[in-house]
Length: 270
Image (cartoon, rainbow, N blue to C red; front, side, top):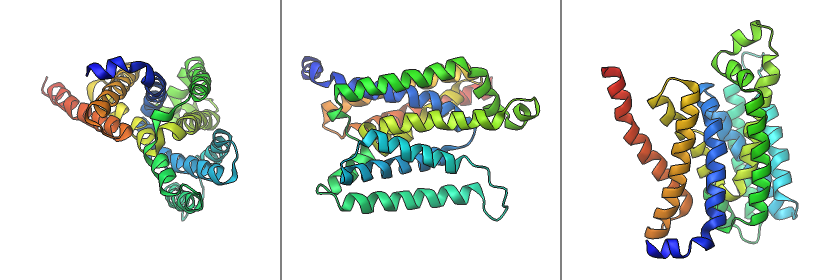
């Protein structure tokens, strides 16, 4: 334990990276869970990974290519298809499996191969650089600024899309904006955090918050607090027990989720 705090200087960038990803993804997870678009976020995450895989073998900028692929995925998955025989779920499912296959095929042509697949799936926050941290901080600040300014819009289309639409709001536009902010968060964090950690932060924290509270703003606070706590504890445990960092953080998230279940039971009893 003492070794960890003695060497904290060496881990400052990975820890900051984990906390930033935890903050933005856990915040957005509330919208994702309430709108029941968890599978959409998973599919977009995989598309973003395919973009990074392409950047690996073409020597292009991974962040830029990831953003392009992510926004393309958002545009496809957020479209409401009128054709009854072509459901949104089928498009999302096909997008997920195709993006997964493309990612593996592209990475298989890389000199590193399986090691890069591991990084895409599980991430490697230990190699986070100051440049990545600064870029993440800028984009995350923009995401939070948009959400603070237009909180009521996003809350309305999340809680009742049809009601927001009938009230005169351009609900489709604001839904697209929500998807774009989710896509931006995924693309900026996927390279360091990986699929596993990004997907976990986009789902589990909101479930924690909803188990404890019914008030939306309170759920945001709980989700963000739990995710940041899990990131710090998981990082510490991964160092002490020599576990992979991302899976350790995910395990910590799940353990905290299990510990919050009694709160829901007690609420129903009272």
